[in-house]
Length: 108
Image (cartoon, rainbow, N blue to C red; front, side, top):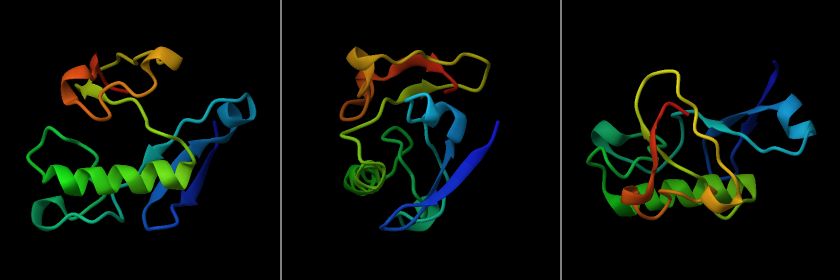
C-alpha cells in the first residue's frame, strides 16, 4: 500500500492511499501539523469531544474539507481497536456537525 502525502492549501497535511483513490475512493488521514488551535490543542485538532473550542475545531474542519474538495467527512466515536466503520453516502457526514451522530465505536 502506498500513500501520497499532500499539503492542504491553508496548512497541514493528509496522507491519501493512492490505490484506493485510483478505484474512486477518497480516504485521507490527517496529520497533526497545521490548524488554528492554541495551547494543548495547537494542532489540526478535528475532534469536538476533547475540550477544544468548537469554533476552532470548525475552522480546522473547514480547512480540511476545502483542501480535499469535499463537503464534510464522517467522524467515528473513536476507540482504539480493530473496528473500521463502513461509510456509504447516507453516512458520509455522520458526526461532522453533531458529535451525537458520530459513527459508533470505531478506530477508523
